[in-house]
Image (spheres, rainbow, N blue to C red):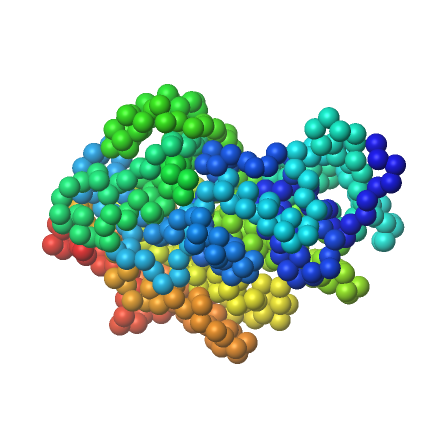
Length: 552
């Protein structure tokens, strides 16, 4: 054991995506801060088959590119994502004959497909270039948190690098970024289950999958910029599951199945051969593409129950949990990087306040409450919702609602630095009162809609880029706002959500008259009342024939 422990301002246990980006954010905010990162894996890590979590959406993309200033790396070494795309393709090989939900052209504010190995190797090099202590191949052996009754005592971490003697360091702050191992969470008994029991299997193959070639029909090819569908996060959906296809800049492709065990058991897909058999039944077109690439398999892994909660993330005792060490939701909509960015921003603010010897107790309490509300509200998008994923009539409605909520509230708050501002958070609470209950009511209502839906799967594309309001909502994320304008935009978002909920209610009344809409009606009224405007937000209802539907 080293006889003289080193002393730092912050020790980050874990040098994956959450830990390394936090180190960069701390150094950016406080250039003289002494930060040490301890990472279990040896660097460089493998490309492609390192970790999942490759797709980003707008908050995570903004965090990496603009908050941390890593845009040049993303442009040079990663793939620009062509949005999210859904195919209602269960049991089908004729992709040009099924409903497709996606954009015909990129939306104004985009995101990235990230090869985690390439990115984390770059981040490991970048933290060292910025003078941050980075130890890889470091296995943490002991963690002693400072006693609660000694406000200025230091935390102690002991680790071992390979076969070298045990090393010791102390720090005022200790951050757990160890991922699912959750050292602090385990030590303090903070782990909590949630109500979402889904499982996932995934693998990478060393060749890109190009759905653009799955049909040679000229009309289908012309629906969007071709051949660029392969750059989307492609979702192949069916009742109780979805399949992801994510391209990586290394030349590999990530493939995953995420399923509710009430519909598809983990045992039916927990090896590569079983997953291939599953694809042969449920997604035969993908099976046909993969069948000739079996020799290109790079890895295979699964999680039985990947989603979980945590009792506490931030503490005025100067510790915190970052990334998957705390909570994890679901890969649908790719919120993982978003919550890394949100959590790291809160941690950075707490460390900065403490470094300036300002009290942090009130901020810890508010950030904990707000972060948990973000988690709970997002979790509602997934719990008991997988059953409607194969519904071409109802899933598009849910997707529009979910993204309107995301871009109009959470993403807007993050883009305009309102996340740590207690005044901005107060405005959010005041302006968005009733929106969380309304979100819960909509999630319940669309699930019930699907039980009545005829699930018409028409050979059309529902083109998000053809809806001006949707494109503008995405573009407006980057608009500069004064505090007064920000408050006004939140109010506009609340009004738009009530309008969208009203349209969903009206559509259900017209198409499914037997469905009881009174709970949703009460939620809309509690949130401020029905909103009916001439300009409609949703696509026209899917008719019996293609001519009666919105076709592109």
